[in-house]
Image (tube, one colour):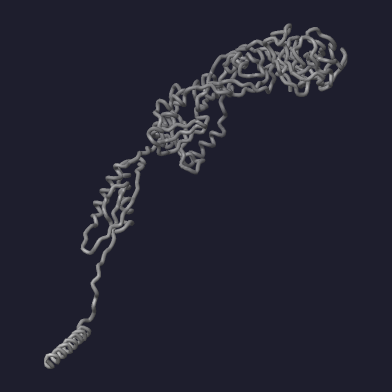
Length: 528
């Protein structure tokens, strides 16, 4: 029994010693020990507009590929292309030995296909033409030139002039403008310049001889008879732009828009010698149309003065074409009116003491037009065949009196002209204006003058008439009290009466009239 036990102990001791020995041997003979560890990494799955296009090592590589794909798409067209582009990615964990990276060429090809299928719109290289507030978009420079040429050709029947586009030197940005030149100059180009060039002493001598050569007076047959210059009266700006097809207009429609004439209101300033009939003839506008456009004109007999501004309608296209024509013509002509000043008269008073008669003459002249409207004429040569006789007119120099509203406040209740009679016995053709106002409101003289009547005036009730130095008369009716007497001299703004409700009247008010040459006119047109 002892033997067995002892042997066990010896075995156990020997086992411990063997283990220790093995550890020591490992420490001495194995240089290092690396424990086992699982290693992994990440790549990226790439999506363009939601569609998977492959895997790459990093996002920067995907962005480079996307830029290249966009370049390839843009290279397929000369126009500006808009493509919807949305790059997204997902992280993918990989382990040693995995081979999940796609070929770069495959990723690029897939990206390109996705972008091609997602082209949103193509912006066409186009040209915007701006003339004042008018704008039109055309597809090419050739169409721009054709548009502007059509505007010129409307007034150039012989088509002597041509339009060309050139950079606008006055603009910092690249903006084109339109220039007009003779076709023969544009066709000849530089060859014309070379033909006309003179060098050295020849050039100097030519200039010297030109300065001393006497000018020879032209005969009528020596003048041109036609268009000598034409250009755009408005600034034409042409800018390159990228636009959608639906933003462009076809050339035929653009030409119609730029050349069609539309009526536009203009201001005409009355000059010496003007009458409404003369203005009608000069502007080619019917007299009744001029009267309709201007509230200050009551009828064709309304007085107009130098400096008055009248509204007239003029048919004009969107662009102003300025042209000069040189013509030799035989024409009737009139001499300028001769005015003789009369200091004792008002400027509204005139008297013709010599009637005019037209003369006949030959002239060579340059006439300047804005579209079809004559704006200036320069006579180059004149030959009188039959002398014209001028109109001679005596005209006053004194400034005529002014007229003011004859009361403070008041509500306008009845205007001048046709109306429904407000009360029995009242006129349906109202010859003045009415202001409703309480009884006893002060009434003043509209202008200075001499009282012609002051008292009862039948339908007027209590009334005041005042004669004024310019020959006009004012009347104030339905008064409650008269404060002046006939023959009395009154000044403008002086109190002459109190308002009332006398005579044929529907209520407290002032009835006011202005008469010219004994005829009532609308007072509101003459009050300051």
